[in-house]
Structure formats: C-alpha cells, structure tokens
Length: 218
Image 1 (cartoon, rainbow, N blue to C red):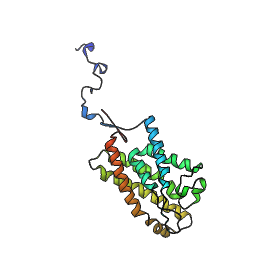
Image 2: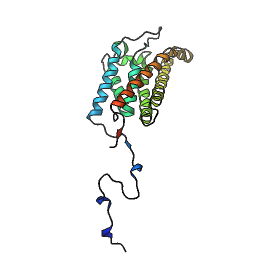
Image 3: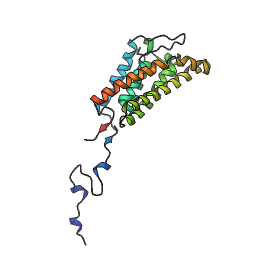
Image 4: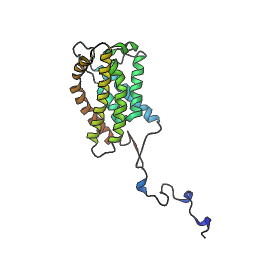
C-alpha cells in the first residue's frame, strides 16, 4: 500500500501548473470579463460621450420623415465591436438615459421623453438591441482568424436589428408597413458604409489594445 502522506496533493503543485491528468492546452486561453474594473467604467463613459458628441456633425435630412442620417449608428456599432455585449449596452444605455432626462444629445440636439413620440423613437430604442447583438457576436469574431469579416458580420447583424426597430417605430406612428420599409431603405447604403468604417477603427483598437474586448490569460 502507498502511504497517503507520500501522495502529492493539489496544494503542493507549483502555482499555475495543471494538475496530473490535465494539459496546459485544456485550460481556456481567453477569459471573459466577469467583473468591471475602473478602466471598464471609464470606457463606458468615454463611448457614451462619443455617442453624444456624434450629433455635433449635422445630420442629413431625408425627405419628410424627420429621421436624419447621422453618425450615431457608426458609434453604436463601434461600441459593440470594441466594448462587447455588457459594456457596449451600458454605454448606449447611459447615452439614452442622459438624453431622456434632459441633455440635448439626440439628433438635432433634442432631449427629453418627447423624443419617444417622434419618428426616430424606434431607431433610438433599436440602438440597445443593435449594440447587444453586435457586442455578443464581436466577442466571438475576435477569436477567429478572419477578424475583419467576423466583425463586419457582427456590425451588419446589429444594423439589421436597429432597422427592424426603426421600421416598427415608423409603422406604429401610422405609416403602413410597406411605406415604412420603403422609407427605411434609404438609410441602408450609408449604414453599410459606416459599418465598414467602424470595423476598420475597431480592428485598429484591437491591435493596439489586445485585451480591450476579452482578457487573455498570460
């Protein structure tokens, strides 16, 4: 019989080395962000401010809809591509909350809950769904070899969600579904182009700060 005292315990193993029967490759190489640190909170604030600042560039009016083409969708995509699901959702949520309580940070320097009665309401609410989808898919895309394609797909998926909410909002304002679809189409080319720009910026940030979206184990 083997003396139990001679058996190596897990506590006696060198720290950081796998126990017997396991290999280093079986340990996850990438860890999710389960806890937000001060740096995460700072990023949330910075991207919320960036989203608010995006309205400083005048929007392009589109017909009589009252929904201008702005840079907001570009920044919403960037929030998801860089911050991921949780922090991206927090940044966009903070922006919307500040706008609803009175800061003039919606397109056209509007503010207050009255914005929810405007034709833009569906798109504004859709920002939350869009950044959530983009952020969730971006966390997967950065682990792949074809990061650009994956991130672009994530941005497009988020864009589809935003437009779906926008169309629903227009339809609820009394516009027929067919008319709402036709009115929404005019925004698609610009949003696709903005997604290309957002992905290019996000890739540069990921190269400069590899841990900005997911924490990699040393």
